Amino acid sequence: MTAAVNTDKTPITASFRVAQLAATAISLMVAGCILTGFQFASLQQSLTDDLKVQASLVADNVAASMMFLDRRAAAQTLDLLQPPPYLLSVTVYDLEDKVFAEFHRPGATTDDAVRPALRRDGVDTSLTQIAVACPVAYRREALGRVVVVASTSRVGVGLLRYVGLFAMATLGALSAAALVMAKTRARVEKAEARMDYLAHTDPVTELGNRRVVYDTIAARIATRTDVRGDPRSPAGARFALLLIDLDNFKAVNDTAGHSVGDALLRKVGQVLRHVVRPDDVVGRIGGDEFAVVASPIADVAEALSIAERITSALGRPFHVDGQEVFARASVGLSLFPDDAQNQSDLVSNADIALYDAKSLGKNTFVAFKREMTVATQRRVAMERDLRKAIDRGELDVYYQPQFDCAAGVLVGAEALVRWLHPEKGFIAPADFIPVAEECGLISHIGLWVLGRACRDATRWPGRDTAPLTVAVNVSARQLRDPAFIDRVSEVLQSSGLPPAQLELELTESLLMEDVDTAVAFMHAIRGLGIKLSIDDFGTGYSSLAYLQTFPINKLKIDQSFVRQLPSERFEIANAIISLAHGFGLRVIAEGVESPEQLAWLQHAGCDVVQGYLFARPMDRVALQSLMTPVQSAA
Image (cartoon, rainbow, N blue to C red; front, side):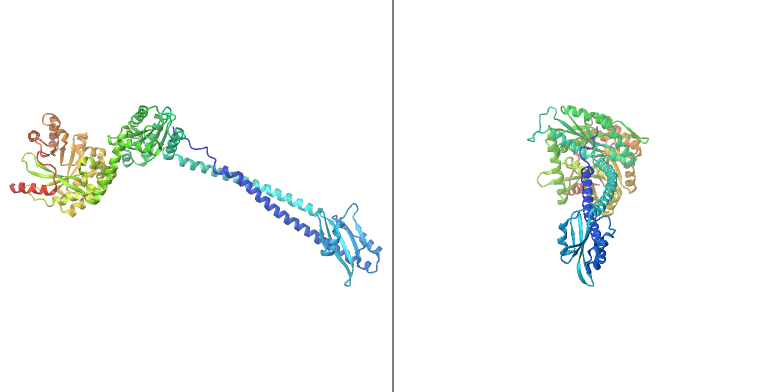
């Protein structure tokens, strides 16, 4: 099954939702308090201004009465007032601060405590009342003062109306904000869900991605490890990591297109989900690499059984967009806690096992073993030393002489790279060539060998019959490199070697990996006038139809057939020679080590031979000395 997307975490919006609403409400409350205070001050000031006007009017009307000390007239003047509803009392005082005349609203009471203060600033306020004093004068002669007292109920009513209006506005604002936040939250949660999906899901196969696989491994290890960090008892605690790498996915992309490649990946994902158990986690962790976390696992046999089901299921052809494509895979597996005690080692060990599976010929599965680590370390050390060897010029080119089978004369030589390590001595090509191919150094080494061989061949003595040829091996990386043909042409031009003296060797298995690419490559090489030969013929199972389309000059019998001549394998060798001559090709036999083998090859009509019977691989100086007497005799 695929790993479920993590939904336990609280969404970002949920964690801030209450805080956002609370912050909005608090902000509105603070603003409301400030505005209410301002409104209260404004209403109170308005009331005070009105009272000042009232007091001034009364002072003007009672001035004459006070001038003539006519209390009755002053009282009548006050009785004739039409005070507003909020006015409580109007009192006229003489210069001795005695009541001269007064008006009181029926049922209203005033706070006398405010009056002494009026002598100082003319205005006095309390929670419920406001009093304003105004001097009474006639022709600038002070006669007394008028004190007007009013209720603050007008201010309270106005303030209540304002607060009510503000509350309604605040409620509307909060409702609008809540609506906007709800819509925003929905959009953000949708975006979060999409981000979470992309963070945990491979968009092509809809399987869990690398993060899900690694998180699953970490979770499995965490739940199966005690507080001291030691793995628990293997019973119920063991699980396996299987790394699956498609063997020929690049060829599918190159030949059928990326849309077919993506469709194939989806089908592979579906097959993997169907093959594994319900509780196993399947994920795509790379371009054409998948992973399965199988838990629980009883033993390595159960893990190997899952790997076998995977390779068997992926070994069948897939029908994609009307095309039949194959997705054969190599599988490497590692067990916790048997092979590793932590995630890093578990993944590394599974990768080591995967590499071993590919080296066995692909479309197979391998379980990790401790000795694989040693081999990997040795391979890493070999790569490091090989890079240093290239920089230091430790590599050299040796030549395996080739002789005419019937006449025994030298006709050419095969260029072979050799590595003289300053401490370990000569390192076998079988040890460092695979490392060079794996790490990508083979293209650099191959081009260097080609240039060196071409320059050396220009110094070889000429012959009256035919020039000596130099054969150079071509690697898989060079065959797939679009720029390799141009580089061969550049080497020929810079060295001055005629193209007819250069022969490129391609292994039969290499040609069969991608026949169309190989045929196009060979036609381009032949267009330059360079010869071609198929090395290790008989081991790659090429059909006669393919052989007929290959624009080659020679077939090279693999030494595994020559080694057992003349007692065994003579039928195969005889068939190869007859087949080659039937197609007009020359035949080279390699690994000739005995006179009996040579005699049989001569009788069978083989054209060219090479091997220890004639000469071992030698450096250019030794080859030059070998050529001199031969050319003199000629």
